[in-house]
Image 1: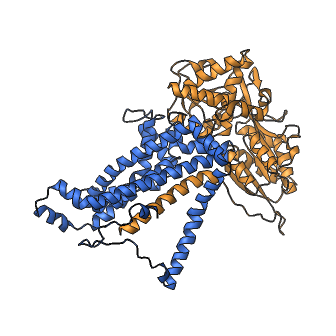
Image 2: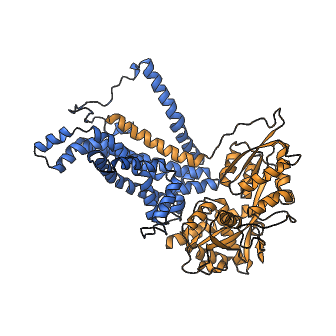
Image 3: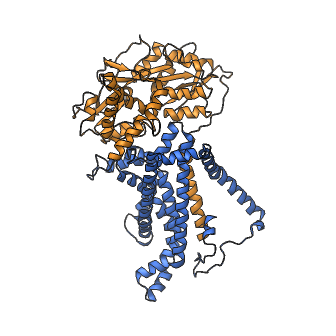
Length: 349
Length: 291
C-alpha cells in the first residue's frame, strides 16, 4: 500500500499543479475551420469578443438578419476576457469578426497576420463603441464624492480592476492620471495624485465585472468603472449611483474583420457602424461612435432621457500618445509609472 | 523515483497485519511483464505523458526560451518575489493546519458516531465541487465587510489564508479516512493491554500507519494551494506586495504578452512543489520507520 501511496503522492501532486498552471497559461482554444457556406444558403460567421457587449451584438445580429446582406447568416460566438479571447484567436480559434475592449487586442492579430493593417482606416478608426470612465458610489453618495480630488481623501476605500491582469482596467488609471494634466497640472502632479490614489486602493479585482461584484459586496466605498458597466449593472437591478467626472477619459472598443473572413463579416461590421447597429450599443449603455445615432431613453443611466452627459474635458488615448507609448510609460514591468507607484505604496502599507 | 534515491533501503510496515518487513521495495523484474500488464503500462505512460509530462515540459521549454534572462527578470522583480513568498508561505501554513485538522476530522468521522455524521461526510467534499469563484463569493460574504461574524478580512493576507484553507480542506481528510477505516482496533487494544498510554499508542501504532496518507494529503493540499486563483479574485484584492499571489502574477504576465516570464514563474512554482513533496516524503518515511 505504502509504495503505491507514495507514487500516488508524486503523480497526483504533479497532476494537480500541472492542471492548475497549464490552465492559466494555455488560453488556447481549438476551433475547426468550417465551410463558410453550405448548400442551403446559410453562412456561418464566427464572432469572438469580450463579454460585455454580448447582448448588444446579439441584438445587432437580429437586425442584421433582416437585411439582404444578413440573410441566412448563422452565428457561432465566443465571449470572454478581451485579452484571453484575442490570444485564443492568435492561437487558432476560428473568427470572422472580433470585438475587443482594447486596441492592443486587435493589434496582436495584426502582428499575427490575421487582421489587415488597414483595419483602422475607416471613419471611426476601427472603433465600434465608446464609453467613459466613471466613479461609482453607494446609493445616496454618503461620502459626498463629486470629482477625482475627492478620491484621495482619507477614509476612501477605493476599488478598481487590476491594471496588470486586466487590460481594460488601464482606462481607469489613465483617466485618473490624465485628468490632472487636463486640469493644468504637471506630470509630477499627476504622479503625486496617482500615488495618493493608490494609497486609498483596497482591492484590485481581476476584471471590471469582478470589481463591480467586490464593490457590491461592500469591500470599498468607491469604485472606478466604465459608464456602460455601471449602466448595465443598474439595468440588472443593482442599486448604486455613478458620477461622470468633468474631466475623464473616453473608452474606445475596437471591432475588426479578419483577413480570410467571409465577405458577410465585412457587411456585418458595416452594419454595426450603421446608426441601426449603434442604437443597440446605446441601449446597453455604450456611447455611439457614429454622430447622428438617435439616442433615445437608456434605462439605468442617471438621467435615462439624457443618458450621456458630455464632460467638459474629455480626452482620448491618442492624447496620451497612443497605446504603445502608454503601455511602455505606465505599465511596463518594474519601470512603468504604475508598477513603481505600487511598489512605493505597497511597501508603505 | 526521486524518493527511492534518498533512502533506498527502508523497512516499511506493510498493509496486512502483522507487519511483514520487506527488504527491498522494488523487485527489478521489469522485463517480466505479461502482455496485458505491458499494455496497461503503455496506456498509463501515454495517458500520463499527454496529460501531465508534455504540458509540464512545455512550461519549462517556454520558460527556457528566453534563457536565464526570463528567470532572472521574474525572480528579481520585487513584486513577483513578494507574490511568490506570500503564496509559498501561506500554502505551507495551510498545509500544516490541514495536517492537524484534516487528521482530526478524519478521526472524528471514522471513530465517532454522532448525529449529522452523514451530512458532514457530504459537506466535506463541497470545496471540491464548488467553482472556486463561488467559493470566493461565499467567503467574501462570510468574512468580508458585511460579515455576520463582525470581522472584515477581505483584501488582507488572512483572506489568502482562508481561501487556501477552504479549497484544500478535503485533501488530508479524504486520504486519511480510508486508511483509518482499515486500521485494526485490536492492535491498539493490544498496545493498551501492554500498558501503553493513549499517546504512546497514537505515536507508535497509529501515526506510523497514517503517515503516508497524511503526507499524500498534505502534498496535494500544498500543490492545490500554490496554484489557487479563482477564490481569490474577489476576496484578496490582488494588492501588489501585500495580497497578490503567484497565479495573479502569472496572469498579469500573460496579459502583458510576457509568456516567458509567466512560464518562468510557473516553473519556479513547480520546483517549489517538487521540493515540498520530496521533503514531505522524507518526513513520512522517517515517521513510518521510527514512530
